[in-house]
Image (cartoon, rainbow, N blue to C red):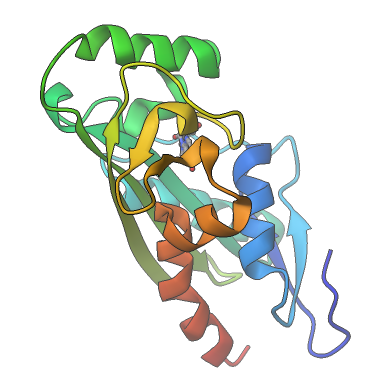
Length: 198
Ligand code: IMP
């Protein structure tokens, strides 16, 4: 998965979500790490009460189980008028993306306050499970009354970013990488990751 032939320490990307994996590979692809997928059977229960806590759990447990460096993210959508829901339950808010979007739109109804934010915590753990780096990225936006755009994954079609005047699902992948919660978290992590001596 890595293009570099220099220093190649294995780094396990601790996610089973193909949409997130694709984005994480983009951020990490040019580094001097040999990216590896998390073993399929290795599932970490997300029992934390914050995004950072869950990202720590995933990174730490995958690192210990594989004996390798591991990087994990935990992310979700927090809608102000829904007291931060779906929040930590973003991935479990319905059976599939369409059901999850429908539920958020139904619960929000015609509420005039559409403000929301996407949050992403990223944690890098050492092979012994200790935390080496952690950062959080936030992207503010608004929930549209109905979906718009065909790209991306998850809640992308209902998340409108005023700064870009379009939804996540209407962005090119380059634009989403630049503006998104995950992009911002990785922008904070990457310079530190490059300075790490392993
Ligand atoms: P987890 O981080 O794997 O616990 O799941 C986060 C959930 O939040 C995903 O399954 C999506 O439903 C949602 N989510 C996280 N990031 C994004 C994004 O960039 N676009 C749309 N939905 C997202």
